[in-house]
Length: 199
Image (cartoon, rainbow, N blue to C red; front, side, top):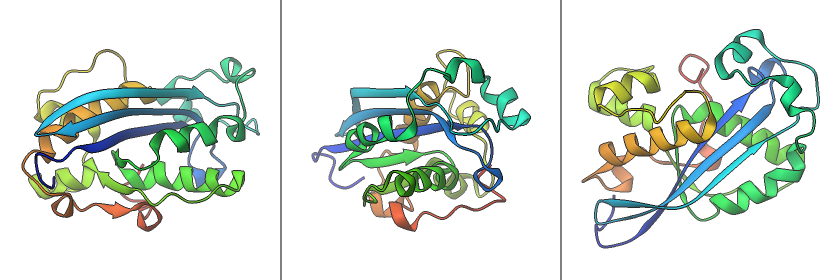
C-alpha cells in the first residue's frame, strides 16, 4: 500500500450469477465487506448483502450447481434497479478488491448500463493477478490461494459475503508492505474480462 500511517478504505466485492453474461446470465446476489486499512491492520466498517430477482428464467445448470441459489427463493427479491444504487453508494470512494475481477466487474458494468447509472472510478485490485505475481502462475482459483495462505473459510463457499470475507483476508496477507501501484491495480472502467481466466 502507500504510507502505512495513511488510512485506506477497502471494499471487497463478489457476485453470484445465473450463468455467463454472454449467455444471458444475470446477477442474483451481491456481497461487499468494507474495511479501514491502516498501518497493516484491517477493521471491518460495514457489510452489504442482497439477493436479486432476475428478469428471465435462464439459469445455467452449472452455475446453479455451484452457487446453489434456488430460483424459487428469488421470486420476491428486488430487481437490480431497486438494490443497485445502494450497492454503488456502499462502494463509493473505496479501493475495490475482487478475485478474478474481470468476471464480476463485467457483470457490474452491465448492470450500471441497464440502470442508467454513472460508472464509478474506483481503483480495482484483483487477488488472482496479485497471486500470479507471487506464484508466477495464472488461472489461480480462490480455494487454492486460501489453502496456500492457510486461510480457513467460516463455512460454505460461493456465497457472496463469505467469499468477500475470505478474499479480504487473502488480500491483506498479500498486500502487506506493497504500494497500491505495485499491486497491478486498475481503474474500474479499464478492467477487462478475459474468458480464459475469469470464469
